[in-house]
Structure formats: C-alpha cells, structure tokens
Image (cartoon, rainbow, N blue to C red):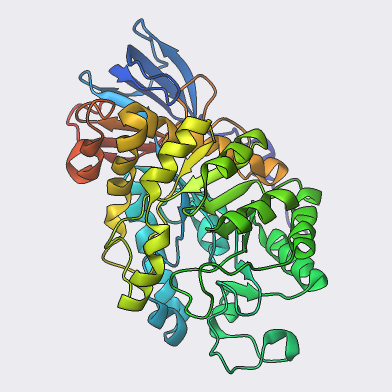
Amino acid sequence: MGCAVAAPSFAFAQPATPRSLLLSNVRIFDGVNDQLRDGHVLVFGDKIEEISSSPIQPPAGTETIDGGARVLMPGLTDAHWHMVFAPNTLANMEASDTGLMYANAVAEAERTLMRGFTTIRDVGGPTFGLKQAIDSGAVPGPRVYPSGALISQTAGHGDFAPAYAQPRSLGSEPSRFEQIGAFVIADGVPDVMAAVRAQLKRGASQIKLALGGGVISDSDPIDTLQYTPEEIRAAVQVASDWGTYVATHVYTVAGIHRAIDAGVRSIEHGHMVDEQTLKLMAEQDVWLSLQPFEAGDNPLTPEQIQKAEPTSHWDRVAEWAKAQSTKVAFGTDLLFQPDGTGAQPKLLSRFARVFGNSGALRIATSGNCDLFALSGERNPYKGAKLGVLERGAWADMLLVNGDPTQDIDLLTDYERNLAVIIKGGEIFKNTLPDLAK
C-alpha cells in the first residue's frame, strides 16, 4: 500500500509583508545638516521609505507614532567600542568561565542600544558570535563592525603575558587572552599576514593593529614603536586584498607617521599628535579616531595614571584637527569597568566643547559611518546608508525629548530623554502612549 505524498507547501508560501511605521509631526535632524526641519517619516521594512514636509498617507496597517514636535535623529554610533572588554574585568576574562564573559557582553549589548547607540565599531575582542546573534534578532544590541582580536607584537600593547614568559614566536602556549580571541601575538611578516587573514576569515570588517605603547599594558612604554614598516605594510596589503582597511592603536608622532607611510587609514587615539602630522593626515585622507579621555573614565592604577598623562590632552588635539580639516571620528574606548559603561553619551557631550552640539552629533552619526564604510566589500551593512535620515537609509532612529542640537547633554539622561529607539525599523523602546495602528 503506497503512501500519498503532499506537495511541499513552501512552494506556495507567500513572503510576509514588511512592517511599516509612520513617525509624524517630528523635527528632523538628518545627521548632515545643522538645521532641523519639520516633517514626517515613513519606514517600510528596515529602511526609510519617505521623508516629507507634508503629511504622509501610510499604507493600511501602518503603526503610527505622533512625535509631538520632538526631535527625530539618526541613531548614535561609537567608532571605538569594545563589546566584550567594556562590561568585563581583566580578571574575570582571564580566570572565569567564558560563559560569564559572554553573558556580561550580551547584557551590555542591550544597554548600549538603550543608550541610543545603534551602531558600533568594535576594535578588539571576541565579538563575532555576539554580532551574529544580534543580526539574527536573537538578542537586542547595536549593529557591529567587528575587528576580531587585536593583533600585537611580542611586548606590544596586546601582550599581557608575564615578562619572563617564553615568547609565542619561540614556541610558548597561547595565553588565555589569545585562546578566547581577545588578542593575537604575531611577530614577523608571515605571522602578521596569517593573523590578519584569520580575523578576516572569521568575519572582520576591518583590522586592528597595535603600533605603539598603551596605558593598561604594563610592559610597553607609550613612546615605543611597535611593528616594523614591513610588518605594517604586510597587514595593510592583506586587508586591501580583502577590500578593507587597517586601524591602528598609536599615540605618538613617530608611530603615526609610520602608520601613514604603510597605508593605514584610521589612527586610533593619536593623542600625542602635532599639528603638522594632522595636516598630513588631512592631505592623505587618514582618519583620526579620537576619544575624549578625562580623569576617571577608565579604572587605572597610580602608575597607569602617570603613564597616561601625555595622552590626556584630547581637546587640544581636537582643536588642531578641526583647524586642519582632519577627518575626526568619535569613540569612547571604555574598558574593563562593568559599572562605568553608562558614561558613553557623557563622552560624546564633551565633543561639543570643540565641535559644537550639531557638529558633535554629525560626527557621531554620518561622520563615523563614513569611516565605517571604508570596510568596502567587508561592510556587513552595505545595503543602505547608515547615520543619516534620508530616503533609502537604514531606519535607525532616536526620538528625543528636547533638542540635542541645542543641548547635547540631554543624551546623557538617556533613560528619561530617549522616548523612542528604533533600529532597522524595529521599535526597541517606546515611552509614548500614542502608538496606534
């Protein structure tokens, strides 16, 4: 007796209709222009379908939010964030089960989004799996441009092994930090190229290389030059072959020049730069990814505080960069302080001291996203523009109680003043009572 076989139902399945959302009666900061304009914004699926100064007649079934003349702006971005490092301590990353490390990172991803940061560039850490979970909708969080492990030389900024440990290149076992994908130690051109390729294979959108000393890494003085020109050029070549770029941790003038000469596109930190080098960066179209560090931002020992002093003059560097028309990105680099990540928007408000409210907001929206777009073919969100409110852009938006172009400090009280948070057309927060269908 035979068995009847039904025709596969998926052949006749109809695709689900994308959701639509109308935000009416809003004042629009588009991420590019200083001036606000009154209007209405229609979202279809995960992108902006229409922006109009006249009322929009939405499709049937559209969810509607009356903005009540609140400011609608693009989601904020952070060009120097560490999704795993920020909510964990060095001790629990090294000594605890990785489950704890990732549980902290998952929780922090949602908190980052709830602070209004809808996109971040992660410049070091094991974030590939968390990014996949966010992109699939399994957990809430920002869009992620991951670098994967920070690539460092022996005795470099990413080498946290004891001073008398056998170097990795001489046959020692990988450290705990290497095992979990936080850092990778690579010496010599072949190993550097392999390390870069490994991060790209895992899904890196850009590469992070350490070219100078750091504050929290005790074995490398700030003034040290790390990686030879040949090693840096090798990393740049591999990244370029994959259609993307290299960003480098470096503070000093000599280190920045070495990076520029090798083809690096983004200088991370650069707090000891001079005006002439900033002019060269502008001429060579090299970005300065600047963090407005001030005392207390990161938990430091007295020795580290002394070591950090030459790197603490961000406002002077920002003024010089503005005068030289150097491209500046905003980032925070909050590290290893689970209770301190909420300072992220406070650091953004500092940028307004130099760039003004609207200028700081432009940098943290469309400006940062211009930097992210350098990842070219490795750009995980290249289907539309990020950081702007315009037709066809990704629908990542914040509805703000008050006008941050006049008072950027409103964003520091994000729980009170971010009335609506939208990413990819999906509402993640709505405190207004007038959501209706």
